[in-house]
Length: 99
Image (cartoon, rainbow, N blue to C red; front, side, top):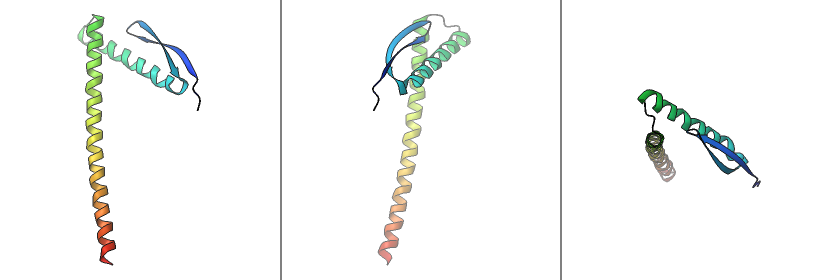
């Protein structure tokens, strides 16, 4: 496994943040920075928020809501899948015990 680390800088809200990242993680980190800047721009232009701390708080809140919604959706999908697997298991067991 390759443990090579890159030194990169991610610019968020007009400020650069240096970090070390695995080569495989670099595109994800850059995309995350891009998405954060898009959200910051959205809150700045749509709601006229100029204070950097307020912008970052709103973006953090927005990201957390998205994450919680994804978690809820994944939990619901997992439950549906688990129910189907239980049904299939019962059907197979019934068919095998009928012989």
